[in-house]
Image 1: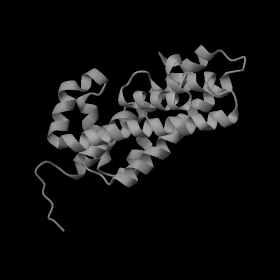
Image 2 (image 1 turned 90 degrees about the horizontal axis):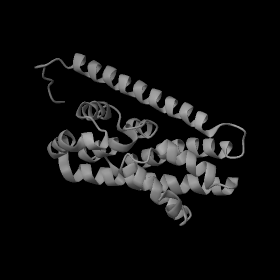
Image 3 (image 1 turned 60 degrees about the vertical axis):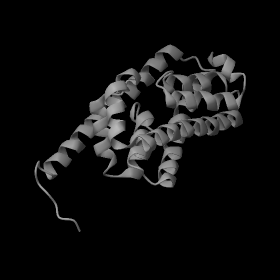
Image 4 (image 1 turned 90 degrees about the vertical axis):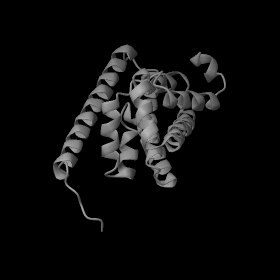
Length: 207
C-alpha cells in the first residue's frame, strides 16, 4: 500500500504523513525512516519531503483539533474513556496531557510534536480548550518539521551506508520509547505539583 501511495510523489508522502497523524498506524518514525531511505535520491528531494510530510502532519493535527473543538470537554472526555484504548490512548494519559497543557499552551504544542502518543493526541485537547488557532498551528508546524526532519535525515544517511538498517531502526525505536517514558514521567510530576499547589477543597478568589 505504501509504495502505491508513494507513486504520487510528494502528494503521496504528504498523504502518508496525514494518515499517520490521524491514526497510530504506521508508526511515524518507521514511516519517516522508510521515506528517507527510499524516496529521497538527493538532498533537494529530501528537503521537499520534509516540507511535504510537515504539511501532512500538520493537517492531521488540525483534524484532531477540529474534533476536540466540536466535542467539547465533557464529550471529549467520554470519547476517550470509551474509544481511547482502540487508538492506544489511555484515559489516564489523556488527563495528564490535559493538566500539562493548561500550564503552557505554546510550549506544550511544540514539545508534544517530538513525543510519541502526545504528538498525535494533544491536538485533541487543544481543540477542547479552544486554544487560539494561529499559535497552536505555528507550534505544531515547527515541532512536526523537527520530528519529521530528524527521521528523514536518519533514513537518508542510512540508504547507501554499510549500516544494518534493522539494527539502527531498533535503536531509534528504543530512543523514541525512552523519550515517551521520560515525557510521561514529567507529566506525572507536573500533575502532582499542580495537585500539591491546589489542595482539594481550596478555593482561590477571582482577580
